[in-house]
Image 1 (cartoon, rainbow, N blue to C red):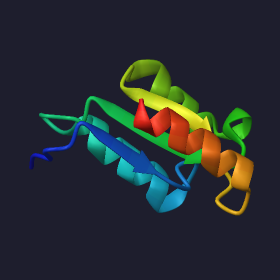
Image 2 (cartoon, rainbow, N blue to C red):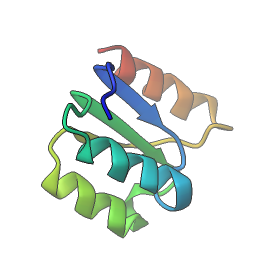
Image 3 (cartoon, rainbow, N blue to C red):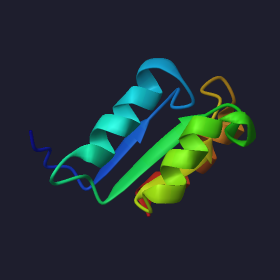
Length: 80
């Protein structure tokens, strides 16, 4: 399977489906250049931190979708 995307943003990436999306994306033959994996508490997302350690295209970003400030930061990061 291939995905023609340079950047992918995933919410809820610390566990469950979000974490599995990150795993699947980084395992693709043609993985996205950047996978922005967001979660509310990156410091406690052990499995996600491990994935990012071994996959330099994974960038972890703190994001609570109900927090306007977090949304603004996520937008600024994803645009550049």
